[in-house]
Length: 178
Image (tube, rainbow, N blue to C red; front, side, top):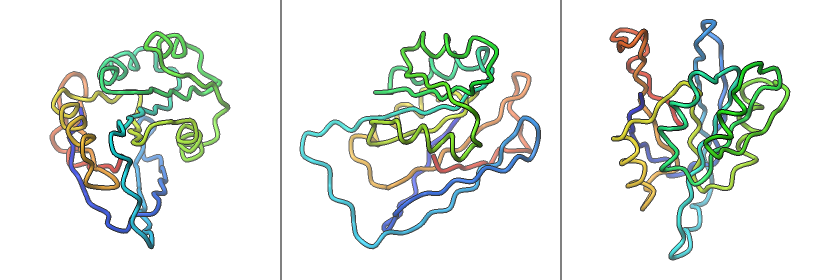
C-alpha cells in the first residue's frame, strides 16, 4: 500500500539508487540525489506525459497480478524485468497484463533497475516491487500530478501489510523516492 508525497529538487541532475539487503525478504532502498547546473526545458505544448511502470521480478506469479491490476489503468507502458532463473509463471502473468517482458540474467538490483530504465519510453517512471499495490487514492494523485508536474521526483510512503494486517511499528514511516 503506497501513499504519495512530493519533494521539489530545483537543481536535480540524476538519481543513484543503492540496495542493501537487510533481511531475506526485505530490501532497504537508499537514494542519492545529485544536482544539475541548468533548469530542464519545459515539455512541448499539448504533450501527453507518459507514465511507465517498471518492475523487477523473480518467482512472483502469486503477488504480481495484484500489483499489475493496481496500475494497469494508469500506466501507458508496463515493463517487467524477469530474472532468468524464475521457475514459476511470472512471465505468463506479466504478459497477460500486456506488459513488455524482458528475461535477463541477474546482475544485481541497481543494474536490473538501470536495464528497466533504459527500456522505458515514458516521461515518468514509477519503479514498484512485485508485491506493492498502488491504492485508488495514490492513482488519483499520480494522474493529477502528471497533468502538471512540479517536481523532478516524488516520494512514496509505503504501508507494510503482513498476514493481512498493517505493521504499525516497523517500516511504517518508510518514504522512498520512486
